[in-house]
Length: 126
Image (cartoon, rainbow, N blue to C red):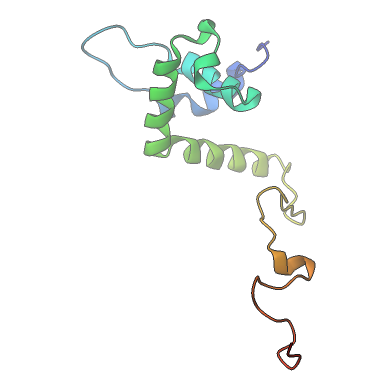
């Protein structure tokens, strides 16, 4: 059984081939699974990179691996695979939609207020 913030064996097997990379020179490469667990810990805890527990390895290594995967589109591929798996299992309801209000910024005009410096009714003059 996976610990908190760690991928289960089943979840890792679903995406493991996205992370395989050959490393021929220098220090032995840290485990991609451990690095991914570190990234997941960071995303769930909302902590700064420097506050990452040492059990995941140096925070700079985890950050470097995160940027590499982000730039390669690895996380997008992970989400696509997860979406396909959940859809095959019938766990996705395509009739349900949600918009997170924290991501949609409301303007002053959305609450009925006008723009700054603009009269609401141009027929009224002062």
